[in-house]
Image (cartoon, rainbow, N blue to C red; front, side, top):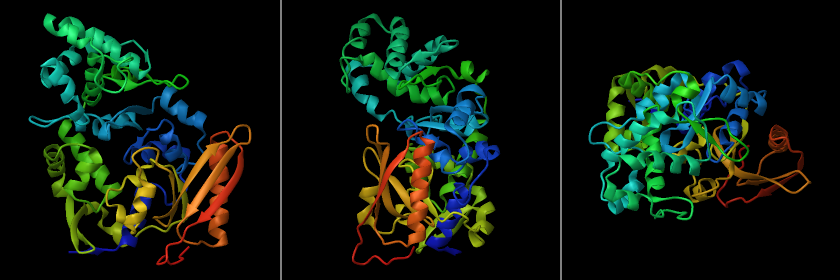
Length: 408
């Protein structure tokens, strides 16, 4: 069984994520379609695409997403908003449909509402699917309005004795803005997205809009579910392999039962390898790529906090020192990551300060040479310009661990 080194894995993944060199605007569908780009917090996908195709302006990104609709935003892996090519909706939506006896992604929290209503999940999902064609031809502003509008559409379908409970204040978060029915809808929007019934429309200021897949794309979602699932697993393994079924389950945010079902659909296309003595899998088609990794024309990267590259579940590949992981991956508001040849060597933040412009702070865990610092300064200034803000200052802070060895 082939043993792959951490360096080989890093090099391969950089190329798979299109971070090995600068890509052109014509490559955008392939770049975005590698594994999708999370858009939570809003704007995260723009930063991710900028890091791969720096020549693409935000206006061009919006044109591709909102006007040409080459790209599409919908709830996808882990129930998060994800931007992906509309032509690949099968892999990013239909493949996530739960099978018999499998819980749907992102719906575990609905249990409180179901207990309060004394109603079952499948009945409510069926009723929501029944009313969602009313989204056709409509554009609803804000997630709160979407939840409550659909809850009102569902109300006549409920048994009369459940309607008062449906309209009670929500037991989640904001009872002054959401009803129990609105909370139920919020959880069920993920399954309905995977069924091709609801997508994001054009953003209006700070608020998203929502409509039906059919209205936005111009046709219903049609997909061969098994082939769509195989393609999803291929995408995952190409971007995050070597991997295991459990890592895939974590990345997808699904149940073990669903994850293993999907994994098995593509199992014949995989082969085992060894990583630090442990068994994992790659796509057989990627074998040569690991053996002969592409040359890197970009060694230093300034990635956004929710870049797909940082979504590697075997985090020791990105940063071997586990004591640093909490500085990279937080419960909320991840900082950006400073990456050198595939390893995270520090974190960064960029904050607009009044009329002064963007203040960028970079914290490094290992001392780096002048060339790397100059490149980081250039990347910081370019990112601020991409956001339409002048870069007022870039501050470096080096916090070296006693066992850290300078290497960049």
